[in-house]
Amino acid sequence: MKQIVILSGKGGTGKTSLAAAFAHLASREFPVVLVDADVDAANLELVLSARITERHSFIGGKVAIIDPDKCAACGICETICRFDAVVKPEEPDRCYYSVSPISCEGCAACYYQCPEGAIQMQDREAGEWFVSETPYGPLVHARLHPAQENSGKLVTVVRQKARQLALDEGRELIIIDGPPGIGCPVISAVGGVDIALMVAEPTVAGTHDLERIIQTVEHFRVRGAVIVNKYDLSIKGTQAIEEFCKNHNVPVLGKVPFDPVVTEAMVKGVPVTAFGDSRVVEVISAVWGAVRGML
Picture 1: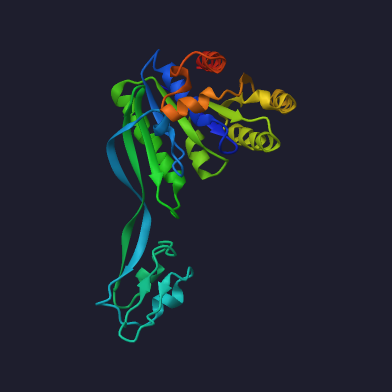
Picture 2: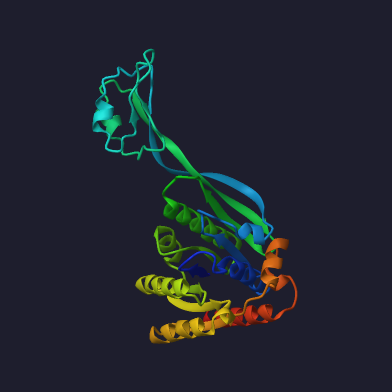
């Protein structure tokens, strides 16, 4: 089993469009499992016309709950809480404390210090993860609830489920649409993969963020390669990216031109390679051939 992750130093570079195209092209050769590891803003299912077949809760931690019938309003919990999550009673007829679930970090300090045993630690649902059916293979994806943390842990859950699916069904390739940036979700997405494909645009911000993601991939000793998207918007910027990659011994597998047909395909909910013949489809197919060679 091989695993490919598609990354970008910033959002909006086109990695989801490429992930969908690679899913379409790879599924012609062997069975694949698809993963959307951008749990904060998952959208691969939109391009693949996915249909949810499984839905599961993701427990991101604990939150303190105060039982009003047991609370003696002693104020110890408010005193020891370092996150100002304990709310003091302000109404005359309310004689118990409560906890703000948004502010609570789940440290359980109040739970251990409450003399009345009025506080319990309950599971906090931080998001959901799904298994969906697509024309190109099963897709494992997730959605983190607003204001919730632990997105790196949710990425790990999604990847573990995808790997188990691949093992159970004898699927040979996992294609991961990774999150943007270089934070915890990216670290969870890149660990243990065979190839990291890094998508960059020829802009000042795109070049700077590509440098950061290359350093991240090198740190985890994962083989990396670069794809320049919309390269013809700035030939000078593309040349700068190629020079940087050459100095870091990172191959540039291809340069994808700007083409409105990519947007048209996304609106229709299909990968661009399944939308029709065009110059951009030829280039992406050639890039996939290079990726296939690396595998």
